[in-house]
Image 1 (tube, rainbow, N blue to C red):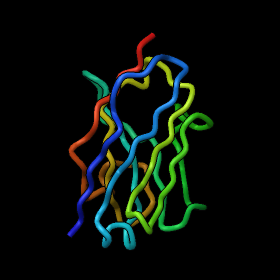
Image 2: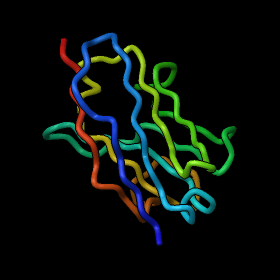
Image 3: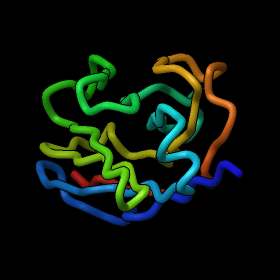
Image 4: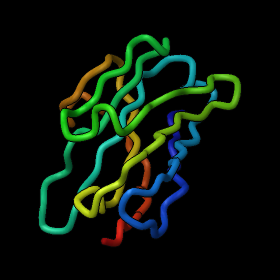
Length: 122
């Protein structure tokens, strides 16, 4: 069974840092690529980052490359999104999702967590 639950949202000032976590089932941790997406009010859900089964297969959206880092700890069945130098435009609900392959399109992801909100204040 594929399960994903995000945590770590909240309020942070611009320029600050925050780390989101995506807790997965053991099956998900072993078998799936995991991606992070975000959805701001009134906007479509957009790709943020994804990581395959190995740390080397990590990819980022242009808007976050160099500021965000995705990582996974398969022993803990958790995928992380470390976010630095945060901007007000990073404010959104953040979702983690699982897919069979590393991909940036929403349609490749079959399983989604409920999301976690965080806000970057200016």
